[in-house]
Image (cartoon, rainbow, N blue to C red; front, top):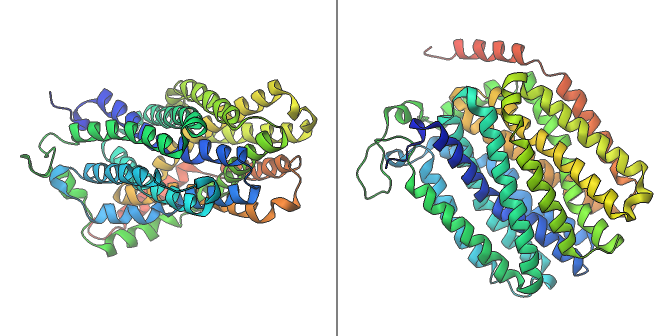
Length: 434
């Protein structure tokens, strides 16, 4: 049976969901289980924040991968799929290398470096998958597809976060890495089985040829890529979205750095409790998020992004106002649930809105830059928190995060999508040779 993405809508959505599971698997280990594990072992807030900042840095540096993929590819196997296969293979090797880290609890710097290596291949895979999605998804299925993709990512990191949290406690880092590697290996097999277009090769030594569409949209020079990027990246809507991403990303980086410390060191919970709570709630939120896809397609991603960020702001402010109730497990579960639900709404609409803002001529590179900047913003937030956590009380921290989210809401309200589409049309008409 031919498994061709461009010929089957259900195969497209299923495949991108599976690929986002692969993206989530290392996130669960590196960004949920290990920070909680380190906190439970007595690591300081500064050490954990430094780990989160360095480990998450490749997600901010992936903007360099987009132009390379737009410029070079083995078109006989597809425009993006060769990069997917290559990055997943590298991810496997990086996980095996990380499993050999000696005494990781007392070598946080070495552990952070190995996590950086793993996330580097995970981030490259993400760029390739996003580029493939922009190439083969129809515009009227992006909202639904993004909901499934976001669900796949959460299934990946929530399942991985839950399982590897227990694996770290009872089997150490090596066992946790092998579990994630097994999941990645299965998804690598799927990426080998599918094809973007029917005429392409499945593997380098099999029969096939480049598709005309792939040849048509492949960039011919670096100059073409960067000149087109400059024309669209500095449009008002693009700049507003990047500032919004900075606000939201910084709050996420601070949350991922501070939450394990609050629960394990301040409130006395086991590290596995934090990972289990966060993973379970994230999974439920992802499933509920599947219902949002069609509504986003109909009502607009901008509106849903505003509501998602608003939900996060309200949640942070309530957490700060009623900080005396942090000792209550029920209250903490409510806070985590609200954070996860609002975050999932924001995440799905955030991706869909950025896809709609992209110009088709440089969409893959432009989208990669947006997503890279979003993830770099998380590292910026974690890095700032690592430097200044001693100067702000944990009970006051949610006030700061809530205020940043309110700023993000104001920015989203300023976006004028019809005007942006008119500006893109003008840029397209003034393109040389058009």
